[in-house]
Image 1: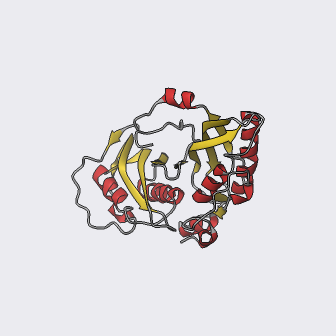
Image 2: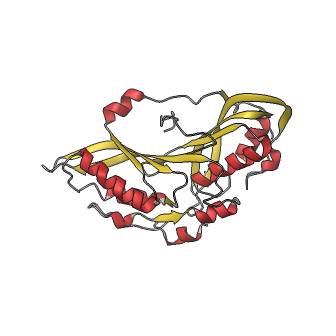
Length: 276
């Protein structure tokens, strides 16, 4: 478990606070998890963002009438802190009985509080249900590798030694899998996700990639670190000209977390999948 997470509200009984309380946000430094991967803030080999989507965002108009909307938050991957997910949820709940003059005032407040917690500017969009409904859901790019016939016997920890490639062939492709699963390092509850790998480099053996993804099944770590681990393991193997790894996780507590890590500037849209 991350040492800071022991002091977070995750996995503990919490009072429901329905009026604005920014102190509920609980930042967790990224440095400890970066160190596990042999990284520091100065040596990150990727650019990226963590997209968070809130499907239970509500507040009051000055008249007392409630509003519901969907919140989209983008936290830089090199921010000093992640925001512990339950504290994020509790903070958003504290807006439920809080009046704001208009949506712009709410967004300004969200930017201020979330940026302070993350340690870098956080992007915020408050979107109407109609707007998000019109976008619908999307399919992931590239080939799905989930129908490949593989044998699996290890689920306890990621196994990069399973990964194979053909160094004699350079390819550019996108592949994805919906079989990513890991566990919360604090509560041990399952986290379900879909993962995309886009790269130009030595041809990756798809069956070995699927075996590797499944090896995360009983692994305990935060969403962000799972994606960073996958990125680093593929980067070491493929030595790619470019590489992007991102995951779209199923929501828990009204929030989904979607980490993107890439050698390129992240310009991918934040579109929902069928499980989101």
